Length: 183
Image (cartoon, rainbow, N blue to C red):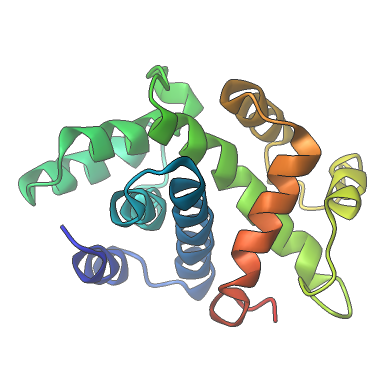
């Protein structure tokens, strides 16, 4: 599976603009981490792009992510990609025992939160700093559907500094700011 195949699959199953933008955001963060860690950018990007592709059609656990995993298996998607995607849903209790799986989990909710932070700023993501994101995380009323617990757990599992990780993801999202609506 290449990026175009993954994008086609995303568009086949995901019709809402916001979920497509979320997929592009997570893809950008995953590609940036792959580059930083010397991993395969294409594979890591595909994982980010497809991690929630089945969510719109199958929003309930375990249908999400298991229905998506079945679709990916039918299309010949490798086990490592499918396992990383399934493990990003905490209720599945699948160990995140690879760098790929840990990174996806650490980027997923944070990407959504960073986008939410960007949307309420005059300059969107252009001048967003990790300190502003950290401050917004403390406001439970802001972006209340984003799991703070998952953000903190992802950072812990990835064993990174929160401010550095947050700024790294912000910088990755700047590269796709126009595509995800935060320019």
